[in-house]
Image: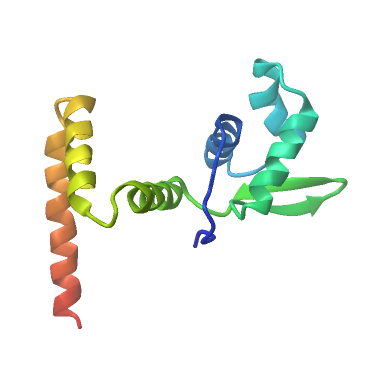
Length: 136
């Protein structure tokens, strides 16, 4: 479960999360080797980024020897849902028509199969809700 507070994430924070989603865990040195070195960023900057993500409740950590090993507490889908919720609350004034219209436009621009995939996801969601109602 994500923390309720708003998640303002910078580009480096997102890169670190992406890395940890792929690798499952890592200490500052390992993350620096993959993320920091190619960008010319110091290990201290990576350590600070890991600490910020920990304080935001997005990473957990465990002390191993003399270093913390960080791992994601949330998955990409959970974070995406929270960020979309925040955008909708901020911009839509509680009206979903704007969001749905923008989302359909985005899907149409993404590639030819996105609208088909969206229809499949909607149909699947309706099936799940129907099954849940049957089991109530």
